[in-house]
Amino acid sequence: MASGAVPKSILKPPRRTSTSPLSVSRDRQTAIYHAEIIQQRKDLELVILNSTEALIDFPLATVDPADPHHDDASAARSLLVPFQPSDYDGLIQERNIEGKCGYLLCPRARLLQDTKAQFRILRVGRQEGGLKIVPREHLEKWCSEACQRRAMYVRVQLSEEPAWVREAMAADIVFLDEVERKRGAEARDQQINQLAEEVGKVQIGGEECARRREERKELARERGEVGAEGRVTVTIKENSGPQKGYAPAPPSLVDGERSDRHLLLEGHLPKEEGSTRQQGQAGNREHYDDEDDWDI
Image (cartoon, rainbow, N blue to C red; front, side, top):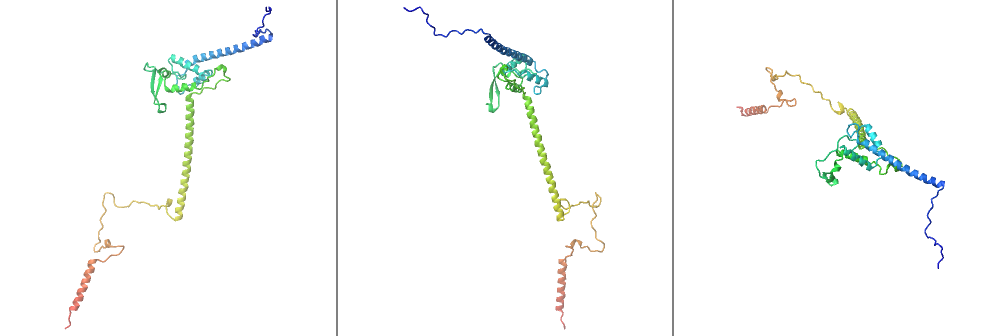
């Protein structure tokens, strides 16, 4: 028969809670650390909630969303620092409930579609396939496609990490219109620089033309040519004739004078062919007459 000894358990004995002052202090510090993290998270969530309520009423100045007021833009940047993309989506939804455009710096109302269909077919560029199917509620979040691009440009700058676990706060938000204005200013500066270079080339070309013009003048003077750039200077002078409206008098012969000026050829008067033939015939008749005379 077995003895009455109790068998030994193979399980580990339960850990006894230490009641020493050092252990109690360590547990207390751990609890305080976690409580501070929870409180910090609650505080940031409250900050995000208050920022959302404030941004629902933005902008405070009714201006064009492409050129918002400086105070509204600065306040929006500071309020969006602790936001995550999900918090930003909640802000857009709250603004839509109020009937406003989802872009926080747009004072206009959102644009409602004239259909109850859940989807709309939109015509897009060839690179995107030509047609795109978009949910109707997604189109009704904005007043225009431009505000949609502005809102999405802000969203992609928000950090995915919660604000209470970030090592440092995110940088200031940059709005799309500010980037486009900066790019436009840089493009204008580049155009001005190119224009200045072209003007400089034109000036250099003008100096080259002037130098060549002077060289042609010098060459014309060496050749003995008269006038600028080797050309003879021709002066046109009006003829001092009869008065206008009267025909000039025809040339007339002087009494008793034979005029052969119209027959002159290079200053010489040619002999008339008829008179020469007559002189020759007269000489022949005299010769024949001499032969007919017989001495008797």
